Amino acid sequence: SVFENEVRKLPLPTCTAFGSAAAPQAITFAASGQVLSTKDSATVAERFAQTVKASGNAVLRSAGKAPTRVSGKRVAALFSGGPAAGGHNVLCGLKKMLGADNTLLGVKGGPKGLLQGKLFEISDADADSILNTGGFDFLGTDRTKIKTPEQFEQVRQTCIAHNLDAIVIIGGDDSNTNAAILAEFLFSGIKADGSGVQVIGAPKTIDGDLQVPGLLPISFGFDTATRIYAELAGNILQDTRSSLKYWHFIKLMGRSASHVTLEVALQAKPAITLISEEVAEKKLSLGAIVGQIADAVVARYRSKELKHGVVLVPEGLIEFIPEMNALIAELNDLLAHHADAFAAQEEAARPAFIAGKLSAGSAALFASLPGYIVKMLLADRDSHGNLQVSLIPTEQLLSDMVAAHLKKTAPEVPFATQHHFFGYEGRCGAPTLFDAAYTWNLGLTVGALILDGRTGYMASVSGLTSGGEPLAIPLSGLLNIERRHGKDEYVIEKALVRTHAPAMQYFVSRREAWAADDLFASPGPRQLWGPAAKQMPMTVALNDGADA
Ligand code: FBP
Image (cartoon, rainbow, N blue to C red):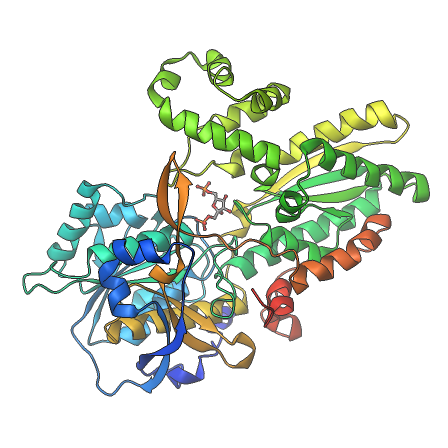
């Protein structure tokens, strides 16, 4: 249809460094002089000796058109973790940069597909058919973490069987950590001639928590997801002022950081928004948060007779409430260390089995939580050791507790509630113009890095308001040591909302006014044409140029 053709063929602005979109040129990279380090860099340099020696942890920037055309490379790309809009365009940009004289293979079903050797060649026609489409369905994805010696051996076998020169991992913080580990493992001695296999990451996640100040403004998928959530939240806000009777508690996806929630708050301006990072900073208890929401409900009713409102709750909130965080950390260690004994218990006996091993404070909190929360806190962790926070009904927990609080303190205040979780519906929408162009350029950058012979880097595009600059971030320069599954592991630290950054300050300066009255906005659907189509996420625009 005309509609499909026009949407699918939107011209994608291409970074000046690559020349024209129709025939992007390969570029070569050079160390910029900016060297990355973390508190654990010394230990990382020992564990990742080959990649650190090669990169010196220096950021790479474009050094102009590649002097010679590289050909004959075989490159395999995979998606890892949750879907995010624009992933298909990374493949399209990569395919375009590799051109007809190199081969792009797709890995089916994420990292697990790499272990199983499920690879196929991606044709030009394939790339044409997925350009500007949402989802990861062209390849599929999963959350397998490559960690055991057997798994590393399987990867090596796949590299040999398919004669690979490079692997591209399109994923979030955990997946790019895996990319760093693989880059070191595959650095040399993999193929018959003793050479290695390059590994390059691309920054994906709707959560927006893969950021490097000044170098990686945002991960792809964030803009699309937040615009979808902001549209939905705006619709609900419009409904509350029409029907005048409900408080809506909306949980928004974002496993840990509250970037998604902050962005939606800036776009839709609801009465109450919780930001996990602020909760942690102010050391608020669950009771204190409930008290704050209840106070706002009472104030709106008593001053303006408003019986309605919207509360935005970040998915990861629970883990940021200090007392809950302490409880979860204890649970993570206990569940890792007593896995067999725990599994041997009848389901009904499991909470008591664990409660008996908790510290006094955590045991008291654990006992005060409703059964539906306890059940989720004891559920299986994912293969990266994360609690599956999207399964925890925090929005229900808060509204139940606010209702109980109001019953005791202000029984005359009406409090009828509705609950929502906006998550999966935001991950696979067709990419916004921002995500479409951003991912196209990320794909070109990944391809150029591979043709330039680089390994152990994550592709990035910075300078988004001034034409875009392709660059490469050394993954080993981002690694920290963190305690997971009861033991120390290398991780790329999640970028959390910085409470002193301009975006948060903008929100703080307005939230009291938004709480006191209905001052919301209903941004409506994503636009592909017109001024609204070209806007960056508000948080990214406001924080642009701000210090880390
Ligand atoms: P990624 O970091 O893998 O991109 O995860 C994004 C996310 O959507 C989180 O916001 C959410 O907590 C999680 O995936 C849900 O995971 P699952 O798809 O396994 O239910």
